Image (cartoon, rainbow, N blue to C red; front, side, top):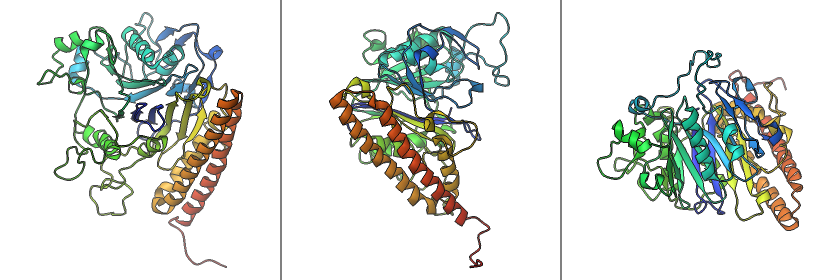
Length: 494
């Protein structure tokens, strides 16, 4: 799926926690309704079968519980998308990425009949093919560290192969690992430096890698068996010097990248490092269509959850490319794909904290719909259930759940952006500060008393707060949108 990912190492974050975040965006014209649930070990399958590829995988008999953000309608598969398990390991899957024909020639993808993606396999067909539909379910319940997550997924990719190109993040309280697939059976993974953040639009990202470490101690680099030999055999390495750049070898730099992908990386890096480089004008170090924007950087200030939400909601504010620009005659308005796009299904920010008891270490921040107009709420992830406002999304449009209420706010507010955005910002800020108050209250109480039965009450208080605020925001957006309808007329009968 077209998505945007941001990873923040523990020394780059405001409180020393690791942060991994991703917008899950649907393809154009599609909107997948989502929910947040907890999967109990007894409900985890022991034999998994994918709907798209029909691959069958025997799973271990000792799964952990984990949160999941699946599709509300399971007809196309689970698509668990993101979650945190009871060992305080987080995973987000996936960021759809790009590659090039040389990679596909060296290691072809598993073939899927995309005209009939769920067509029953012929008897005797190979048991192969995993993808975004499957990855969280077959990986997250079985790992106890971020590195272990990358290793397990790498093993599954080598064994079963994949039919698509993806990037996947894993985190625990100390580390973040980023894995990218290469062709049908190969992969590459790198540990995010503690003091850095990573920016990932829908494009192969890694721009440095150490094969010696990957083939040896694996302190910060890992890859599939034989990846170096495959790279040499098929002349994939395009570097002119001795330093290997995987983006040149395995990635792309097409015209479509320059309007769809690289501008998002440019805007994120420009936000967190405004003084480190020159981003604008003819003498800029990096421009929206630059192919060499760094994969990771040390930010100029520590990054907060609110920063992550803001940048993953952004639409090139303060630049000529903002689709909401008042200048209707600006030819550059809206030429690049925004980060905060209309077809976002959800944003999750997984925050794994090392300074509180393990039972309350993991916070999953979540919002649904277009990030420009929605508000994000935190949930204690180590719980047995999620309040129904988040967990009971149906296919019926209703303001009784967070997904549909958020979608409605965005659809109502977008056509009247200039008039609606002050109310939207007040709604977002109010939810943010009330969330902090509730989190701080329960963090203090649970850390002092070690009574973790309070987690359910904390989540109920958080969700009750956001539901009241969201109901008011829907009402306000509807009132404003009604006032600015095209058939409005100033004279009335009063």
